[in-house]
Image 1 (cartoon, one colour):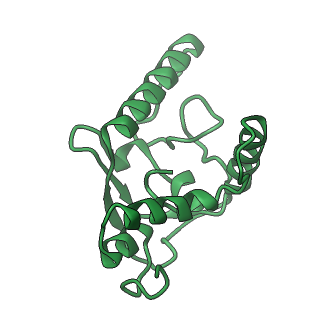
Image 2 (image 1 turned 90 degrees about the horizontal axis):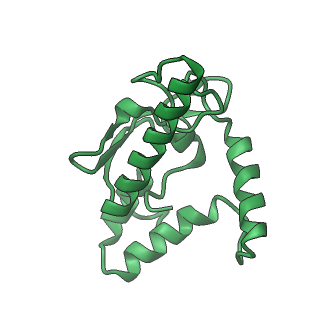
Length: 150
């Protein structure tokens, strides 16, 4: 929600793509659930993330480490952040992420149950906060400098 990444990009995110000390996330690939590929624009990008997102990611990693310890496996340093396997060896399929988000949104009675709407929300919030359109376009991975974003 705070990054504006595409669902395939988020599902392809690996622990090695995160620099939590510097509050930076690197988006360099996407997945369709079967294979990894370049991002839609074939360009990687580095995104600043806020302190709350960093804390949530740290807590998520700690939960994964605890689960791995209980199961006697090791969390892979290059494992997927969002994975159904404890060690992060397999990516979460984008369709699964969409389905899980829809169920959560329905339970919480959110207005929109579309995962993709979070991408729009991120862009809208950034623009409302006065961030220039070229910067927002860059965060979203739009390669046209803002024509798609605006």
